[in-house]
Image (cartoon, rainbow, N blue to C red; front, top):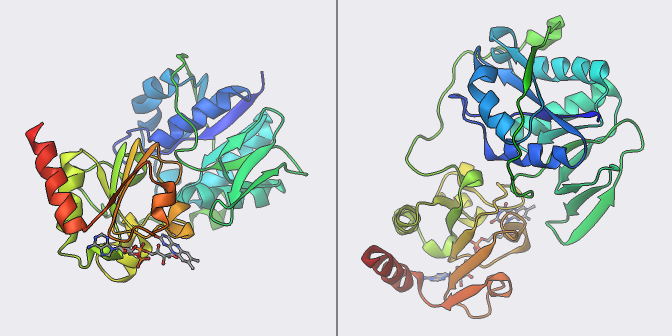
Length: 318
Ligand code: FAD
């Protein structure tokens, strides 16, 4: 069976991100999954067990400062030469900031078509892609090359399938242009006890209705009681209530948790685009006509400043 290359995304301390497990699950439906690890020395060794648990038959690894000490260019170059050498059935990358950047460069280097923001991909290369904030579903196929796709996080349920991966170190030959942009420092954006927004199984989001940055403490409190992440609508972000990295929606992050709680969010299509695949949606809004109620599994028409403290009180009792 031909290999399907999966670009691994992980944290700096080598925790494999959920999106990678989703990509490996999808890869198994197309061919033989082969994980591609780029990172600091020791990355593949630290992650091989987890990657094997989700079916990686092979791990290709490019490690060390040559790859890790620069921006995406060396990774795109190394991946392009690997694709040329192994002729995989498909290449899957996460539809994340770095994944998208590498995918675009890879498509140009290989002169290959690119399928972006895919939520499904069949073995014969037909991709399903939401367009216009999820209002239209498009089926497409590349007309040149192999399926090279960025896959939207949280669109595939990750399922384990044990394999014992063979590890192969890549010999990477980089051009001068690959190493022009060098990493000089790394700053952890936010370190806290909350799970990462796109990985969390519970997300509590606040909108303009929350009213101020200070009031977001209420959103945070409910999220913490449920062990969840905090999200925000664009209106809340644009009003300066919460940082942009927490924005959910078309121009923010896409989440698909087990439980999504929308507080003071009207439910504009651009917001829905980032959360409508959540398994259970709960909305609190004082306007009974708010469009979020068309989508919600459970809705409370009421003032969030009364409803949320009551809900928090109930949760604390249990
Ligand atoms: P509003 O629409 O103002 O809704 C606030 C809600 O709070 C109202 O329904 C109100 O009834 C309710 N409310 C007020 N007070 C209370 C209270 N005390 N208790 C309970 N409810 C209360 N938006 C995103 O979210 N994410 C995106 O990524 C995004 N991308 C966009 C991209 C483009 C190109 C464009 C044009 C727009 C984008 N938007 C995005 C903006 C989007 O169209 C909406 O403007 C935005 O989602 C509205 O945010 P909101 O629901 O918080 O605010």
